[in-house]
Length: 288
Length: 263
Image 1 (cartoon, rainbow over the protein chains, first blue to last red):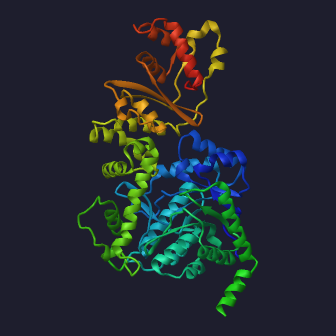
Image 2 (cartoon, rainbow over the protein chains, first blue to last red):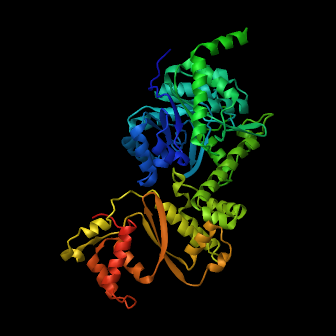
Image 3 (cartoon, each protein chain N blue to C red):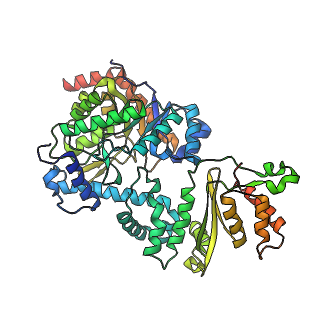
């Protein structure tokens, strides 16, 4: 196995408002928590109080949604400074965001929009990642987005782009296995080829989530259980990458915390299955 | 430059225009820059993002103005939200600030109803939720203050407070919506203003109406003053009989509510 550039934290969950009290009071047996950076980039009050309490007992990673790393607007320095301040306070294991854009003409769309995968985009995004990493003083991870469209002008696949971006910018990858599956279904590419293209050492974290089906498209809604195909893909990822910090994203129709723990238990089961070699043996027998 | 001739900036402009509808000059046709296939056409794929853009912002506004949304119902609230978003799109990385101008926008768009005042109250409650914490100057600290120097007791309200002037009956209307009490509905509104004090105590946000005399001294206390100055101010008012007694009563209640910041 090639060691990852990022420490292995085990299995974590997203810290969501519905579970603040439960987590602070009961300290559940979860290895770590991921928090949405923007929710805590505030002066004080309950969000910061909860985060400080959780940080006393757990490793925390910061996951942003508004970096807009692929935008052609200037980097939002105020945002970066607030993120840096939060990072100083929280001392996260790492900071991540998405390979996407969400701002144009001074307007924030609050979405993770795709880009054309071209050499021009590669140069642009790699430069911005390096600038962000210099400002934050640490390597960041970028997550593959789920997408519902591809640009006609793309010159390479998303996975070729992401792998090359990580190499050029010297950043990490947050591999969202559900996003791979959703996008693969929506655009008709091979999810196994996507996994095979990932630079092993740069994948520091894995996301799992549920999605929904709207007509002919799969939508990344984070409102349900991880589907069987995504579990299979996750096992394949772990078999290739080795142990990777894994977390479940569940942001809408949020269930009881115990249900999230059960879903995390399924992730543990699939990871053990993958690392035992059974996954590879099954693939081999399927191929035969 | 990609094969279809669109640069990264042009591709983003084209998608931005389709999603928001803010730019319509020279709008590229969906098929000209997005791949369509048997699963979905280029236009249908862009429509997914356009739908999610508005849905996400409406949802954010609904979370910031839950009782307003409840009072007008989902359909009307969505219509109001769309109108607001078109004129006040989000310009900050966080959705936390999206509703900052909603009350003002409503006051111009729906001035005949109590919606703007309700929005003003809800925004104040949301706005102080994450203001920086301060050490409270509580009743124990007042008790411990030397009696011969009571006039010098420092009085400054915590930053996590707002003093609002709204239409009379707004606070009551807010309560009725929460209690699902429709016995009087907007009939509770009466002519004239009322002043509402909103503040955060720990993790909970509270509000209550205040009379004119308390409003005057609260405004004084907002920027920092002393108990002696509060007494003088109260004494100058015709509607306050026992200025010293009333001032102590105010200070005591503010301290109990953790409204006072430690000097």
